[in-house]
Amino acid sequence: MADQVVIGLTGGIGSGKSTVARQFGSFGVHWVDADDVAREVVEPGTPALAAIAKHFGKDILTDGGALDRASLRQIVFEQPEQRAWLESLLHPIIREELTRQLHPLDYALPYVLLVSPLLLETDQHQLVERVLVVDVPVDVQIERTMARDTNSREQIERIIAAQMPRDQRLAQADAIIDNSQPSDRVLAEVCALHEAFIVDFG
Ligand code: ADP
Picture 1: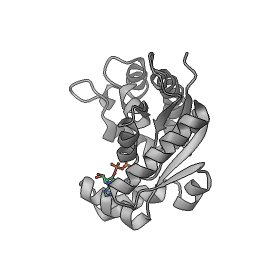
Picture 2 (picture 1 turned 180 degrees about the vertical axis):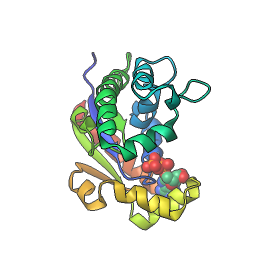
Picture 3 (picture 1 turned 90 degrees about the vertical axis):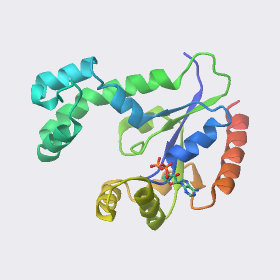
C-alpha cells in the first residue's frame, strides 16, 4: 500500500470542509469524505446492512430495502446500549473502508485528505498524522448552514451544541484555515498549505 501522509480536515457543520476539500482537489489532491463512506458501508447488499436488519428487525428497512435512517436514529437516541452495539459494528467497517479509499493506486502526491466532521470525536483521528481545522465563528456557521440546508436555526444550534466546541477543536489543530474570508483569499491559503505539505511530505 502507498504511504502517503493522511491529513485530517475537520470543522463544525457549515464551516466549509467540503468547500475547502474541493479547493485542495483543484490542485490534484485526493480526498475522502468520511460521511460518504459511512453511508456507503450500509447501502443495500452490504454485510453491515444485513447485520443491522438481523439485529433490529426488518422494520429498520424502507420498502425499497434501504436503511431507514430516521428510525435507526430514533432507536439509538433512546437506547444508548443500542447505539453502542451499532457503533461497535460500524466503526471498524468504516475505518477499513476509509483506509482502502485513502490510498488510491497511481497517485503521485505525497499526501491525501480525510474529510470528517467527527475526526476528533471518534477514533478516526488515529488514521491521520496532521489535523487541519476549517474555522469560522459560530454565527457564520449558523448563517451559512441555514442558507445551504432547510434546517431551522434551532436545529442547527442543537447540532453545533452536540459537536466539539470551537475552542477545543482549534486547540487540537496543527494548521487552521480561516474560512470567514472571501473564497479567493481562502484559496490562496489552501494553495500555500498545499505547497508546504508537498515540501514537508515530499
Ligand atoms: P461543511 O462541509 O463544513 O458542512 P460547506 O463546505 O458545505 O461546509 O460550506 C457551507 C456553506 O457555506 C456552503 O453553502 C458553501 O458554499 C458556503 N461557503 C463555504 N465557504 C465559504 C466562504 N469562504 N464564503 C462564503 N460562503 C462559503
